[in-house]
Length: 266
Ligand code: F6R
Image (cartoon, rainbow, N blue to C red; front, side, top):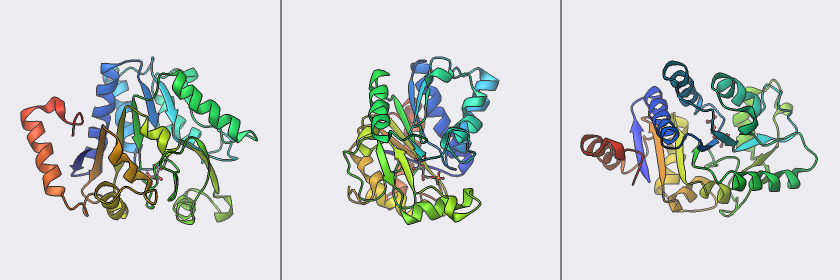
């Protein structure tokens, strides 16, 4: 794992965008796994800026989002599809036919989940998967206890996740209780993974996920088993990492000696 502690959220977002940009330059037809939530908003703004100002090209890209609330239509302002349209897709030149966000407004959830997995396979697998982390350690909506081999399926959200999401809804009763989500096993099959986290509220869980034991109680800890993960945190989210000095030293050494290796190897 490569752990990068950025001073600020802006630097975190720019470094994250660097990694996605490098992937797109290496392979213009990349398959991107994407996340919603507040953490990647700055990274998406960076990508949009680079598209507008420097022509960063998404025309051959295929995207798969991690998750979507059950029973919210794609046009609902709190749906993840709506979020992605407004924060990224509407502002870049991605082909609408290549966008995949789980469809939460369906009666046939199991069939949909199987189809989603099949579509990822048909696209050749995910080249780079962007992740945030929940305060309970979830990646996508793999709440504590999710099997580390789990696949795309319906999940019941925890009370903590429901409370965390309540800020986006007018009334607590409106906050969805279920979501369709890629599984931990689905995520681990991505060729490369980029996890971003910011703010003091994430400090304890970031340290647990990176430096604690691998356990289904902290889904993000499963990333320790993946061969190519970059974690970018801001100073607040990285505040409880025991080996912070070492991570900073590695980053500085790589920048000094072989800049092309930042975000490439552990
Ligand atoms: C979103 C997702 C979630 C979020 C996580 C952190 O697609 O899968 O796992 O990444 O809940 O959310 P924020 O960034 O809002 O703190």
